[in-house]
Image (tube, rainbow, N blue to C red):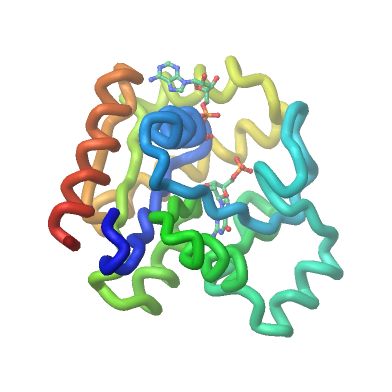
Length: 194
Ligand code: ADP
Ligand code: 5GP
C-alpha cells in the first residue's frame, strides 16, 4: 500500500464455523499490510481467547454505555450477544496506514457498507461447502456449548441468503485454495485503489 492511498476496509462475513477466523489468520500471516479490527463483545471468552487480541470483552452495561456514547461505527446482536466495531479502533488502524480487516456479521456489514464511501471498502462473504460440513466444523471446533452450536447452525441458512450482497463470495472447501482466493481479492482491490 503506498502512502498516498487511503487504507481499505475488507468486510468479511460468514456463518459461524465456516472457517473465517482460520482464513483471516492465514491471510494476515502472508500480508503485513493488513490489521485486524478487534471488536467489542458481551460474549464470554472461549478457551485460548485473549482480551484485546481476539475481542474486547465487556459486560452488557459497558456495551450499552458505549452505544449511548456513539462509540460504534456498527453494532449488532448476534446469537444473543452484542458485538460492535468501535470508531476508535478503525481510526487507530488507519493511523498506522494499514488496510483493515473487519470480521463482522451480515447486519454489521450492511451498516458499514451504508455508512462508508464506496471506494473505502470491499466486502467478502465466505461460504461453507454445505450445511452438513458446517455442522461438522462447529462440532470439531468444540468451543461452544451444544445449544449454541444448534443456534449458530440454524442461523446459517438465513445468513447465506445474504451472500450475493457482497462483492465477492469464496467457498471455504480446500483451505489453501480459499486462502489464495482471499489474498488475491485483497491484492486486486489494492491495485484498483492505487
Ligand atoms: P469461524 O471463524 O468461521 O467461526 P473457525 O475459523 O473457527 O470458523 O473454523 C471452524 C473449524 O473449522 C475449526 O476447527 C477450523 O480448524 C476448521 N476449518 C476451517 N477451515 C477449514 C477447511 N477449509 N477445511 C476443514 N476444516 C476447516
Ligand atoms: P464469534 O462469537 O463466533 O466470535 O462471532 C459470532 C459472529 O459475530 C460472527 O459472525 C462474527 O463475524 C460476528 N462479529 C464479530 N465481531 C463483530 C462486530 O464487531 N460486529 C458485528 N456486527 N458482528 C461481529
